[in-house]
Length: 494
Image 1 (cartoon, rainbow, N blue to C red):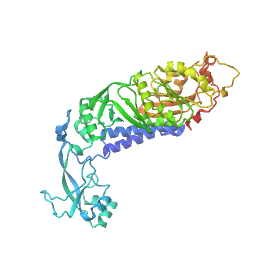
Image 2 (tube, rainbow, N blue to C red):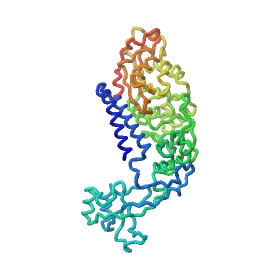
Image 3 (spheres, rainbow, N blue to C red):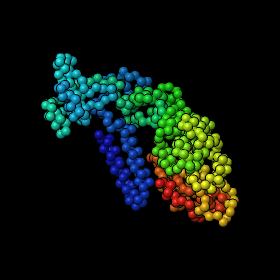
Image 4 (cartoon, one colour):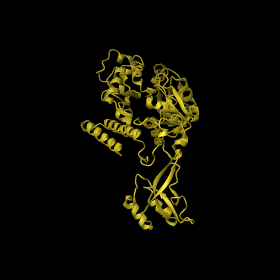
């Protein structure tokens, strides 16, 4: 309870600290950013104190399990005394319903049990009564019942008399947080959180947790139906192929995952490609901007989380990824979802893709009326790749043509930022790559909070004509205003 109050106080402190900047800027993205910081604090509190529904006063772990590195399930068994109330069987269901808020909730545990005496004998051979086990965090004595529960008991003539029941708790009845808190050194934070990718649980364990990693992996499998493999990331994401080394902590070594996201089925080898289940909402947001007949240029396509939904929406897609495994699974997923005729895939470096296939097709696409969307989801480097568009179409074919006659591509470029003003940071980095000003021309969307001081952002803008044609990009100062756009950037978020 004390930890919960400390967490609440921390939230209030952070809110007060940032309240003035919210009021002054009235900036929605800044507000969301601060909210996510609050959320991170709450998550951190949960990691240290356990799940808020954990029965802190019920299970006292045996000292013998502290420091355990090989899981011994039998060592966690314990008999505890819990409160219970004696209910006539003829009104049992109705009373249990009225007391559901204070009933004991435990994995694999029956909350209604036989009515036994202290020596183990049944009070009534006819089974006229049953005991409802109660949560000791809510009920400790007869007067602990709230008005709602007291009225339910009175309505069915059940005395507010508390009995003690000797309950045997086993490993199966414990929650993962309780098990890990009992095993890991006291004072160290406990994590049972993971990202789920099909049958795989992906964890990022801290150094002090590594000696217990095999045990942690087995606990995750035991307590999460459908998880048959637990892995731990052993290094940072490789910026070339966007995959990382991982260690199998428990379960099978099958890395081929099947994932359904936003109604689309994907299959891929999780150990060889990049996949982040936390980007589901962002994939859906970008796809919602598309219309049938649009063209989507996906520069860092991965296994297809943007490309395949876009093709299903009726778009023509040019999808590229440097990783040969991503390229292979992209093609596989296109066929799996029956959109392979709508997707032309490439296995190239991002700049080569832009200055090759995209350069070849872009002039014809710009003459059409359907929109062109360029998606660049490589947050660690994508902003730097924007320089590939400078002078992409060479000299301007006809100086008399108006900018408004062109169907200019709309870019959605992702980047990480650790700066205080994340919006300004990503815009300035985009400008540095393009060598042109984008001020006032593009919205910036906060995708997610990666860490307390690291955020993933998406900057969207119409690619300036002054960037695409070399006659405009030569010796052009970044402070100069770009050519007027055919469509306002604000429209990109509709």
